[in-house]
Image 1: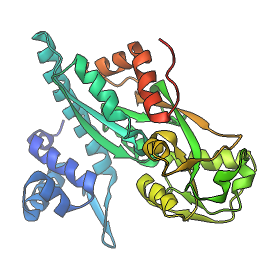
Image 2: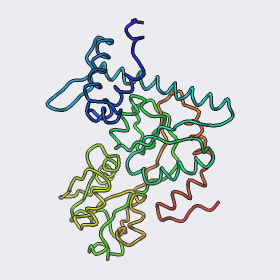
Image 3: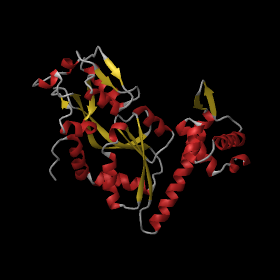
Image 4: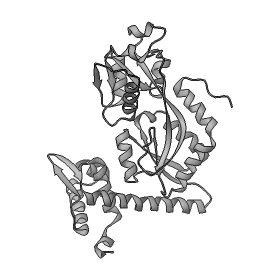
Length: 317
């Protein structure tokens, strides 16, 4: 090992990770409570120790170099081992302590805090770091081993991953209650195509699933409008700009309160499963192991939780 690598500090790795996450020196400085020149200095020192540049500027945008990608993955491994050490020491004291670093796809963010709250009733000394991402960002984070665990649907088949399905993710068609289609007793996907469809940004897992399904059913929408978040998509439906295919979990309050109408489409809901995912052969922390164990053993509780968000009757038992 080069001696220069032994001079890398944990603080430098923390600052470097903040720059990678935000792709901005100024935002990383704010996160780390440092000045921007201090962040720049630490990155320059890291580059000198590595003997390679870590970032490229193209226009005004920051990009990670191959060396940065490699360092980021190594840094995440180091921090994960330290977290695991802390948890193992707590385990020796007879308690489960530590933080669960959990990334979730955006439409899972509604039920995940409730899922974690149920887990925390059993392990009150565990805290949560929750990051909300779209499907493309989730895959990126898996590739660099960024999180303890990740909750997503449509698990990629071309990556070495372990995954555990645990809850249905029903996707339904919604409109404003005064929309003409809400008066129809039964519809097909084809019946919807004469109206504008409000879709998520490229990289969204829900968008990908819906596009594939509509293509399979030969339902082609002539008009569409792209919105950058699930919340914007939902508000655009409420504003009367069009229809949307949305996870029922994400609009349960609006459906229950009568602000949105679920259209009676014969081919829907489109069901996908939420899965808890991690890279195969990843060394899981005690907290991550306990969370997976909780999901395996508490299926009835999770079904009841899912029913609260889907509007369905919970499974008996």
